Image 1 (cartoon, rainbow over the protein chains, first blue to last red):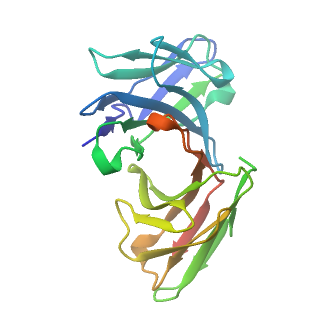
Image 2: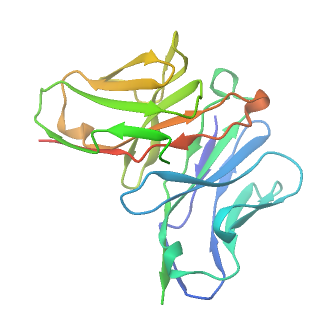
Amino acid sequence: AQSVAQPEDQVNVAEGNPLTVKCTYSVSGNPYLFWYVQYPNRGLQFLLKYITGDNLVKGSYGFEAEFNKSQTSFHLKKPSALVSDSALYFCAVRDLYSGAGSYQLTFGKGTKLSVIP
Amino acid sequence: DADVTQTPRNRITKTGKRIMLECSQTKGHDRMYWYRQDPGLGLRLIYYSFDVKDINKGEISDGYSVSRQAQAKFSLSLESAIPNQTALYFCATSDYQTGGKETQYFGPGTRLLVL
């Protein structure tokens, strides 16, 4: 079975400071990992994904994420936070070796990011 | 994502009523999904469809049914709504890629309140 944990329900960061939103995963085989962002009253928007290759993945709006296989983590980062980054962030995983469910995405519970002016 | 639309955007209904939520997409994707989002629980998969003739139950399908009327349309029905089906419902689409590399793209959501 595949699972995702986002250990922080909320993250607060001052504008201009670097931000990190944490994600750890559990899979049987190799993971495909995704980050989505949800702004208020909006659907989920795709930010970035890790499939294979370089452990540092760059995505939309200046976000990046680092895949760490030994720590089973895929933390989302941004060097300088903006107030407009305030939103709900979801990490998701797909395990290629989960048999019939290998196409399914499993989502974390979400982390609310608040960037303080 | 404007390529995936959901109607209605908001709906209030009463216990026992049948309601339908609709999803349309112009992305040309074969695969479509229905999720529900509850605070603190993330997104959970209700049903998914890989093409018009292929429909599968997800993690929490009890109390729901779906219909894939065309490649671009996928509707979710609550046959007899109950209050614990109050949630935010999302439709998503994806385009098949070998090895599971595909990305899912989401609609704006339908906020459903069952009284």
